[in-house]
Length: 386
Ligand code: EMZ
Image (cartoon, rainbow, N blue to C red):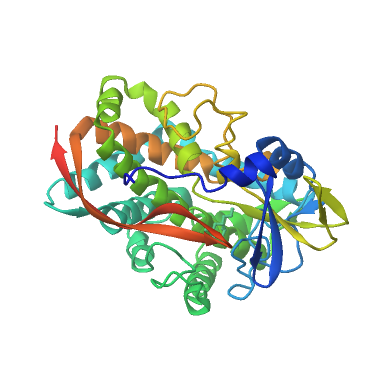
């Protein structure tokens, strides 16, 4: 198998049954695989709730043992959700500003110049982790130096290098966020913590706990997901040099390419919901308080929606993918992520003629009886300058 090939492990289950059942944290999870079913369940929040009493329960694998903080707004339901979203959307859409994009482009430019000096570049830690961290300083509006601390945490804020969920590691993030909030209370600035502490939701000030929950999501949600898309894109362009050339010739294609790469790599495999009543999904009985998951990765390969779903077509036009989720919960960080990937593509095509893969170690996520390739633990390449 090629490094850039990401097989669809859900194909059989999606076409025959529509649901794949797995067990996680001692709980049954029915994964919803087809696009139309997934959209229907995502819309039906009254039956399939995100606002469970237990923080971390809707994530698969469950994070309930490693964090006590409720991530906001992803772990809330309407109408509470809408109030937070209204407040947060303004801040999280700043990446559409030209000035924001110019700074981001310069960051990417500098980072690329740095790695172009290397004979052997390990994309995950030398590039993707750094780019994700540097770019996040813009989203949070904090000094660039903060990235150094975040880089030291490694690619996942909750997982140790052994890839298992780690309570101590999760505590490092929470201690960090608590210190930033303390600092913002003492000396308010223009950073996200200060802005949130000063903001109102539903005519009242946010609680410290809510500010913490928003911050926790901002650090966790866009971490390994963004790092994987960046790294996987390097593997893809290494094995498909004609597409690097195509991007060089028509940089405007980058915006379409972002959507296609997010569809194909589907950085977050799925996200859970808790059923509030007895119901059915694809003729499977779901009990009250039982978990289902909306499987973005499976729906993104649904052959009834996408032509040749297992092919990357960088200029795919009809692309109603759910790589950033679907419905009112769709990814808060998507605007930022889109700009990071788009500018990376244009800068890469600008400076790099070809990418040679030296060696790599794949990263697979276990999902009960099956597993899914999501990225790389390591990807060593050589970049050839244009
Ligand atoms: C959670 C998730 C994204 C979770 C929208 O949810 O991403 C995962 O990588 C994190 O571990 O906490 O944020």
